[in-house]
Image (cartoon, rainbow over all chains, first blue to last red; front, top):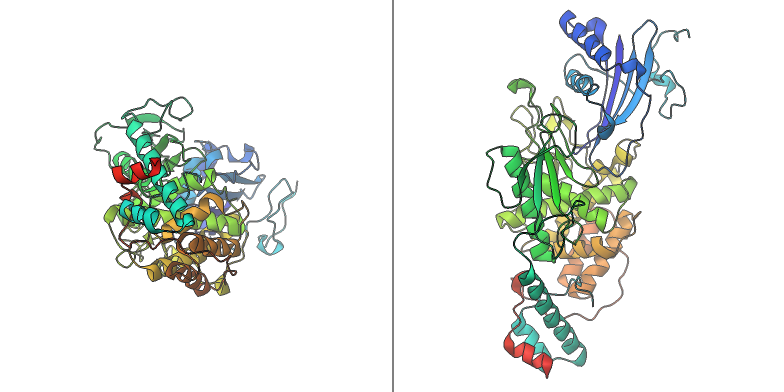
Length: 132
Length: 389
């Protein structure tokens, strides 16, 4: 499972953009991460909710998860629109991207729904696109 | 004249009396207005009840007074959460709760006592804060109605923590409340240069709250934002520096402080609403340079100029150039054309690569004593009798 994570804004204004691949994680960490993805019901979440610009200093998150099989989904959220079921995954990803397991990337790839305003061809993983 | 005229209440009564007796007709009018305002302010303050129940929407029912409520989200994301301390109640022993309470109080006090500005909206809005937001939430924000604080990296082993609780730094609390002040005054949109100005006003007055509370002069102040926030695991002294943007931290995990201190290094990006937290380093540094050149306590003159501009001189989509022009003019309005203060503002903006436009000449007001403060007005019986003659 490949997870692309981007966090911008916040009080510090520091941007994080990393990719985590469960194939290179220790077994225990990889299992825990998959569990968090399931608990968040990630692949069923709406792809995007409005990020209010009236909230000063909030984080904004863009996450794409590709399970390498049938699911490839991308979401975008602000702090105020992250449900409690999704937060543990966001927190774990933040921590992982601060560790040696986070790999630097240039952008977040396109998701499953199209209409992606941040799509960058250079950021697409070097492998064939998934079949519908 | 409006009761928010920044001239008001900065000239002591003995000087006003001299002006009324010896000044020109224009100066006499100025002095009369100032004394009359001082009386009104003092009467208003005296009339405030010590405890006023808040209404459901947070506004007090009659005369405004300081009214803080602290809630705990109990590590959840529900706002505002469970009420844990309200105005006048003793400390709870919970550091986050008590720091949020004290920090909101210090910010309120600075704006009331120095700028005669009551709460974030100028009319006594109740100050609501929520602490213990989510688990491992390394942030604080203003959601348009209240402050929200996370506990940093409290969920990680101590050796991996980067951030302490976000209530630990008074300037962070001040920063968040000033987002409210900006929302209710200039209403700067949170995007591009206007957004960076929004951030800069929060950093500037957040720092001034701390300086005022500690009684520091501009030279004595550290001009850091979040000096207590980073743990010992981080190679850095704070999140931002107004004195030297770009130097607050340089860490293996966090990277290097990206703030520019000059327009030459302005960062063009789509992240973070156009880099509002990085490009704010430019107007932050302009204020710092101006305040240092003015000397004394930064909240008195430099703070008053920037406060005046925030209240009434900027459009919602103001640029850095607009802010430079407005503060340059406000310095002339307050302290006179070619005054030391106006020159300091000019030097502040040129230091970051922005040249303020020439100002409309203003006749200097009567000289101001450097040690005076907004609370220095003391109308006397003699001066009031003079007004009634």
